[in-house]
Image (cartoon, rainbow, N blue to C red; front, top):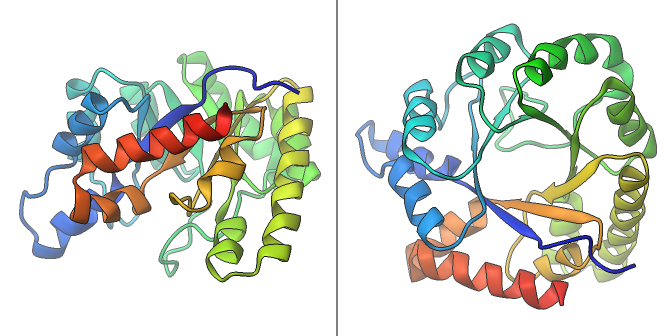
Length: 249
């Protein structure tokens, strides 16, 4: 199967805010990072407003909505507070993710299958407001099928396990996980869902994910912000874009 179109790159700026918050100051500014990403050729900006506000804050969402020209992918938990915030701002996309207060980063996909009725009700007003609703899920067919049933427009497949296995040098297991992601992407596309992917992607492991023909967007943050310390954000984004395009070709 040929790729379905240009592979988009969404740049997650959460950890610019992590560095800022470590000193309790105003710098570095997540909006400035978003504007640099836009200038470097990013296709979208992702920001996760966590319930505990450990990185992105409410004022950051305000500034991003007012200041960037790219689509904003607003990541959040499926809570009444976050629904209210999303409906106030009406970002291009709302990506629902699981949250645990003790986790360092998102540890897995949202369990849509066991919470279908509540999530269907939750996303209805977001859809009515014009937001593209995405479910951040594993490649489990049950989760993909449930996402389609409740009316999500997009699924973002969690690539964290694949990324961890790859970085550990466990390449046989990483290949098996990649195969499962490929099957999940194919199933999601067949059900009318747009397919995105992300979590833990780096220069070294991005190519096989970028080559999955049904995947239309990758959302990458932590690695790019870390790499920017050494090369600058523009160069980090340009190199990721190059590797994605090369893999797609």
